[in-house]
Image (cartoon, rainbow, N blue to C red; front, side, top):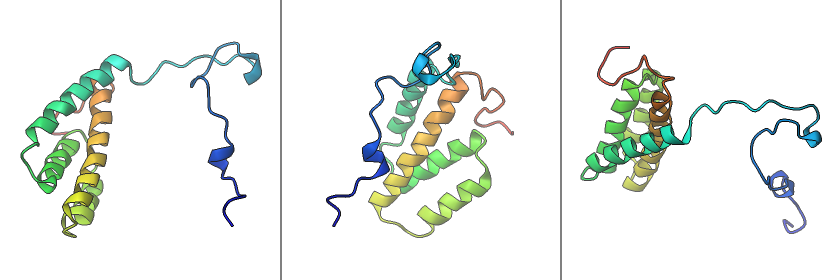
Length: 132
């Protein structure tokens, strides 16, 4: 039944290079390359910061680590309504350790993105511990 069907994803060609190329005739008129939002050096610095945060959370349960990451996300300007939703979903429901760890993994990903944006200077106005 499913053997002869093909999803849209499976039919997509694998890109040889990701990103726009100026003057590529196959893409029509020359597209101007855009400046990246985050550079590799900023991402590397953010990964180092997140690694330090992870080391500090190493002895904590996944719930405690999630709470610590949510506090940091709030300090970087994530809306309280979003954080309350995560708390209600993950902590108030007493999810198992594995599920809570998965949600914490996602929170860490958002934190990594915010740290990288701060490294780029895009989030200059947000500093942990200071009022927004």
